[in-house]
Structure formats: structure tokens, C-alpha cells
Amino acid sequence: MTSATFNPDYFPDKLSPSPSVSLMHLLQLFSNSLSGTLSSLERRISVGHASSAHGGSSHGSSHAGGYSGGSKVSGSGSGASKSVGSGPHGQHVSTPNLPVGEHSAATYSNGGGKPSQMNSGPFKGALLGGGTRSEVYGTSVYGSGYPIHYRSGDLPYYYYPLVWSAGPIAYPPYLNHTEEYGQPSNASRPGGALMQVTLQSNTTGSIFHFLADNSTVYALLPVIRTNCSMHGNLNTTSSSSAPFAYPIGNTSDPLPVDAVQYYRASSGLLTLEGYNNTVALSSTPNATAKTIPEDVDHTLLNCLNVTIGAAIPLVDAPKETNFWHTSKGKGAIAGIVLGTILLLWLCCCCCCCLCICCHDQKRKQRGMASHSQGKAATAPEQGTRMREYDHQQVTNPARAAEYDNRVGEVAAPRAPPKALSGP
Image: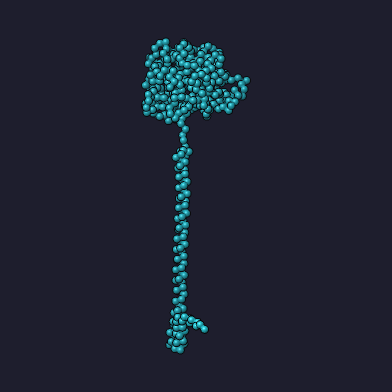
């Protein structure tokens, strides 16, 4: 595994995954592990499309060249974190002690989201959330696995960094963080107290340990057992079938000098028994790490590294809520609809009033025009009659007098009828 520059006040900018997760290693691992007798079901599992007999979910394998997960998260024993359902990235895992509004993480989740700053509590001022799957890999140095621009004390993945119990010798200060995060048995950390599993090769004597919070270990163990028993020489008989506490107080407990790869802002760790990389205890922990011995089962190591990096649970980014699907959005839609209807009604009323006014105006204009035409038609006739009358007065006085009498009779009011007298 690679080493990285360590700064107790500012973690490395962007730590690259170990070379063991390269595409070439993954292809070689598949080539060496798959046989021609694999059933179609096994082939589907190897590419991340296995489903359980009860309609389980499929698991992708696109993250950091990761292997697929195939079994439902379950656990037994005290404090076991259990699956609460399957999601698009894998299994949703109940994760206690997450911040308000965050209830679970998921294997194969992409993580991400906008980080927020804590305004109170022991981590006041620290950035919370925002870490993504692509930045989950650290190195063999404690304090690695942090995304770019996060500082010491930030929690980019919500999970606390793991802490070391007292060892056979005093650890340097950078390995002592129990004051901030409590002892390994601290059940109030996100995911619960630290737990571990042993993972043993079936071809060599190599024994690895995976160490993380309770819910993470319970979520990953079935995935590791499924993938690496098929593709990585994992001996499922001698390896853990259920997590157990860290520390248990014997020489097989993981030690800082056995660390080969940190994950998820140093909240998860893969160790190799007997590795003894004493550089981790020196004043320059960022120095080149001790080479992993050749007799170690590198096939199993690569499988574990890739599987953990691909499937270690991350808290999903908050879903962006469509405004129109909220109560305010629905109210806005109702207001827009009602407003549109009211506007159309007002427009119709205005149009009707305008039509009525125009009709009345045209009717008045037609009446005035008819009256004017009537006057113009009667004026010449009256003039002609007057001229005839004047002419008759001069030429025929008798006819003029007769005309005057006839006009007078027409103009004179009629007398009321006489009342009938009785007998």
C-alpha cells in the first residue's frame, strides 16, 4: 500500500486509492478467479446483478472497481446493525447516532451532498458530510482517506475516525484521539462501538482484520464473505462469521503497525497480522511504508481492498425536493390555476361590455342617420306645396281659399261625441 503526506492540522489534499484497485488488477483478479464451470447465477453475482430468492436488490460494481455485493445485511449478537431495506446502491443499513435528519447509510452509495458546518456540540465549526465514494480510499497512514479541502476534526462521511486502545507501547500523539471520539467501546459514535472481523486465506497463512463501527462491519461482512470466497481465496470456515468487539485483549487485536489501508476518513481499516510497519510509530509516519511480504496472499488482499472500498456504507446525499411537489408548490399551482380562471373571466366580462357598448353606439348612429334622411326627403315636398299655394293665390284665388278651408278642417280638433240621451 502507498503512504501519504501526513499533517496533523491539515489532511492530504486528495489521496489516491491504492494501486491494487486499478483496472488491471481487477481484470487479473477476475481472470484468475473465474472458471469455466461458473453457473449463470455466479456470473451475475460477479458483475453485481445477483438477486436474492426473495426479490432482493442488485448491487453495482462501478465504484473504484469494486466487487458486487450479493447478500442481505443481517447480524446476530449484541448491537447488531440490520438492514432496513434495499436501495438503488445496495442495502440500506440502520446506522445509530447519525445527525438529525440522517437515518441510514447504504452499501455502494455514492455519498456526496453539500457539507454543512456544525454550530454546536463538541465538533462545533467542523464540516459535516459531503464525502463521496470516489474519495473514500486513504493510505496506510492514520488520518488519511479524507476528501480534498477537509481539515482535521471534520467529518466528511459523518463517521468518527477509529481510535486505538492502549497498546504494548506508547503511541505517538497523532494516534491518540480518545479525548475527541471516546474509547473504542463508545456506543454513541455514529454506527456504534468499534467491531472487528478476521479474514483468513485458504492458500496461505495470511490473516487480515477489518475494523470499523458496529453497523459498518455488520453490513460489509456478508459482502466480503460472498465476493472474496469466490474471487479472493477467502476461507469462510476459519474467517469470522459474525463481528466481535475491539479490543478483546489478546495479541491478535489489530495494531497501528499492522495497518495496510484506511478508508472513509480513517473510520474503517484493513490490517494484516504480523505486518509490523514500525514507520507508523515514528515521528515521520508519512515516510515510505514497509513493503508487504511476498508470501502474503495478495489475491485476497486485493479482493478485500476493492470490496471494502466499493461497498463500505456511505450516507446518501439529500434528495433534491422538487418545489412543485411540496405543499408550498402545490399551493402555488392552485393559486396560478385560480388566478388564470379569474383573469379569463374578467377578460370575457370586458369583451361582453365592449360589444354591448359598440352595439348601442351603432344603433344610435343608425337612428340619427335615418332621422336626417327623413328630414331631407320631406323638405323638398313641403317647398313644392308652398310654391304651388303661393302660385294659386296669385292665379286662382278660389282654389287657394278651398285649400285653406281643407287644411283648416284637418287641423281643427274634432268635437267630442254627444252623449246619448235616455228614453
